Image (tube, rainbow, N blue to C red; front, side, top):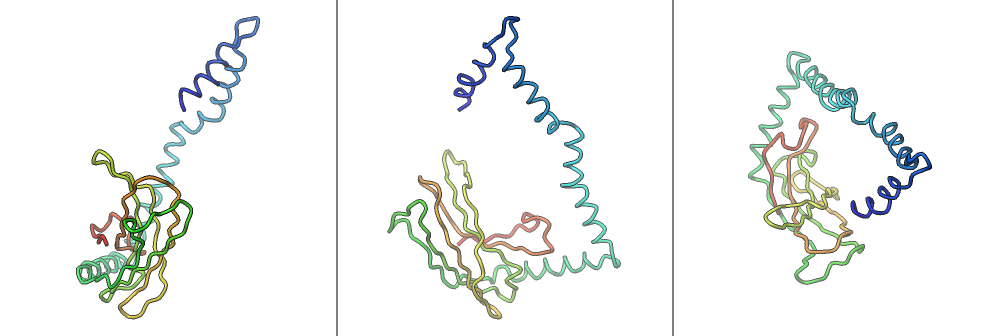
Length: 198
């Protein structure tokens, strides 16, 4: 693709010159790039990104944590203890999912997967269930799709999750379902090193 761009757009612009030997098309291209792209690569833009994406959030989180004599910190610690305590007891009741060894999956068609989970006393708000598709080559894992299951029904201990999958890429893909903690007390999914693969 880059070679096609160079051959058919950049090189002709660069060598198409007026009587003074100036490549007018190329100069317009450069001026347009300087006017529209350069502002995105300034130190100010970088600092603005750091402030809005990281520093402001950190300050806001710090203020929330420190409020009311660190009440939120106690709530987060309690929530995490509950998750850690219940995690090993979470059981997968049933999995009704497509089996690519018995059928050919077709691009664009919809497939449904259902999973029943015993939450071991946790809330459905504490647990996320996600479909992950990846291709693996040379021991490198490249995730090509992630999609979260929806909750269909739940009672005190059990939750029924469902997802509709519509493949949009062809080729050989590995896939799996993973269970992970989630909730308002987690700033990032990696905040807790817990995961279950189904």
